[in-house]
Amino acid sequence: MSEPILTATGMSKYFGGLTAVDNVDFAVYPGEVVALLGDNGAGKSTLIKCISGVYRPEHGQVSFNGEDITSHAPADIRSRGIETIYQDLALAENLDVGANVFLGKEKTRRLFGLIPVTDDNYMREEASTALDELDIHIPSLKQRLVNLSGGQRQAVAIARAMYWNAKLVIMDEPTAALGVPEQRKVLALIRSLREQNIPVILISHTMHDVMAVADRMVVMRRGRIVADIQRADASEELIVKHIVGTADNGGNAVMI
Amino acid sequence: MEDTAQKEAFMGLKAKLGDAQRQSLVNSRFIDFLTKSWSYLFLLALVVYFSVTGTGFFSVRNFSSILTTSTLIMLMSIGQTYVVITAGIDLSIGWTVGLSSVTTARVMRDLADSGNDVAYAMLAGVFAGLLVALIPGLINGLLVARVKVPPFIATLGMFGIVRGAAFLLTDGQQVVRGLSSELRESLRMIGNGSLLYYIPDDGFHWFALPPDLEPQQLRVVSQLLPYPVIITALVVIVFAFILARTKFGRHTYVIGGSEEAARRSGINVDRHLVIIYVICGFTAGIAGVLHLFRFTAGAPQAGEAALLSSVAAVVIGGTNLFGGEGDIMGAVIGSLIIAVLQTGLVILNIDSIWQFIVVGIVIIIAVLVNQLQNALERMQANV
Image 1 (cartoon, rainbow over the protein chains, first blue to last red):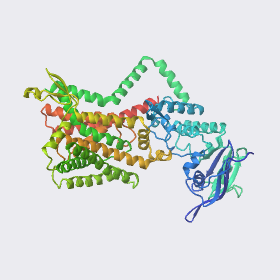
Image 2: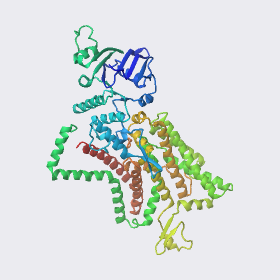
Image 3: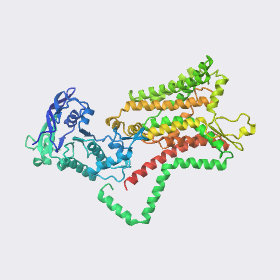
Image 4: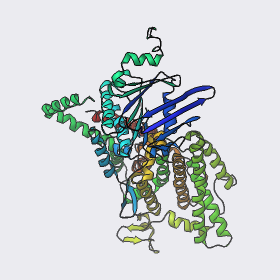
């Protein structure tokens, strides 16, 4: 296998007396979709936040493309191409697609060669191209996001990440709030990221999603990684057993 | 209907339906047009109604007086629009108008009394009046952005502070006393003056009226371009442009849509909010200075009654109190509706108390129409 694009080694994070992440080694390879699984409080989100710079780990090192990015500021880590898409998507739903793809980085042109004004047509066209690459079609690009479906909004968030050259996308429960057809669209988006050789870390509770798109499943429990399974070796049953912690004793415990 | 296959089926069906379906689309466009431009239409309807029923309403003279009347509310509503788009509100600007009016009057009086040139005294006064208006804005902004005090509370506190400060500056009096008649005359020249006059049977005059006018001619003089209206128009253009076309304006909408999204996209939300409250204080300051020029009396209560009208103008203009949508043109139309109602009811000899009731009803209609518009937009998006 090729070199990992992201490695986190010996990661530990404590909150007071609680060990949220306990000496974890984690890596992501180019072009793979890694599912990060685990029960509530297993440490998935904390691990992700240590990578994206939201938390500073007490121990351990994160390196991305060979560079040490441990405890760098979130903005710096984003600018290096690690893009986290949170459940709330961080979109301005009162604005259109173009404005959202260029949120905070608006393209301007000079009116009369003098006054800088926002170049809405340019932003709309660029956004349209970015969406086309993801094979997403939004009827009217002038439409405000509040009028789009959950899946379309998810697509806008992903298109934005890609437009700004994301090299690794972290998605936190991307299908949680969506209807079934929308969920399918999001899974298709994740596949198209993989096709463009952009690795994805997918945090999810939904076993169906994980089985549908992930190349590798990493299961966390009580702050540790308890299983790292390739897609070919995985079954829903096996993963659930690792999540609830009954895999070690032959899987005979009753699951409720 | 989100599913592509379903949508295609739906589009096919729509093509087959032909006339009936197309008719309903036209209808929805018509409703769409109505909801988007109802405030313009309402203003037009009011003007037509008062013109038909009230003698003397339909005249250049009256329209110019309505425009002049509207400047106070309009200036306040410009800054208020920015604040409301960020999902805030500024309750303090009514007294900021007064503070600015009083400060300007005092500085002008004291400088003129100590033997300075009147023009210099006036210029310094205007400068002081505009500057002092930035202070409550700055404190409001810092409280809202850094200390995270809810805008309603922060500006309500500032409401009391600025009110007290304004009255302290007049030593508790209703107006600043002791403005010399020379100063008052100079103030009036701008506050009640016009760039262009029209006298029937005589013609146009720039800057000033001819000195030898008959009394009956004076009664029919029309001010075509009153200075307060010109100044307000310039302020409207500048701030409407900033909001609609610049990066700063765009960031204002982003913050109103989602403060979290704004922060994560790297927008300096705290700094932006502070600037917006300062802008709100600034346009109130212009209103205060202009009030002094028009009425030649620095009064703490100059903008007291106009505060709620300015919020009303913003809401009537389609700006959403929950933030994220609205524009300056809406506030301009809202201000004009209120000014037309004020004047129109007086001309119809209807008790001016009715004005409150009518404005109240219009506000509620405005919010309902805004909701209808949003619902409609959503339906159209899902077709």
